[in-house]
Length: 207
Image (tube, rainbow, N blue to C red):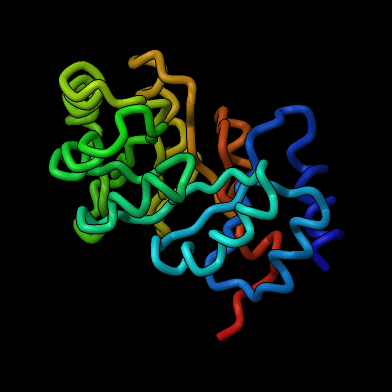
């Protein structure tokens, strides 16, 4: 199953060549191992503790695994996160930024942007992204490599991908983490450099 899914995704990616992040959260071990056997090495997880259980032993077996934290991070989990994960996609507040630099200033981070101004969703508002970026980069010395968004479910995703791409351009940031299983081909059209694909690759998570 994963072989066919991966081939389908790669065919849709074509020559654009974004980083494909296999979202492995809550997936059975056999599916993860199948993806590893196929050569996939970049994976995304939402929670630090679950990722430790799933990946610490695998990272010792595969030295080239690249693990991305794509979900929210609590400040009390920062120390563990910077040790396990290679990239963080959901930097969303000053308090978290200040906690991260206590342990690692060189941790590559995407700023999560709340492009839809949704009250229930984390992320920096579009109006505040510039100030937050310069605070993280200039005041804290962080390695900010791009922006990330999750479009509102009831609005056209392309609108939000475009907003994120425009904002990244104004900041001279090349990284764009956007696009998931249902909309990654569209995200690629807007310049996504990292796509976060779960069910389209692994199948639906067991309930």
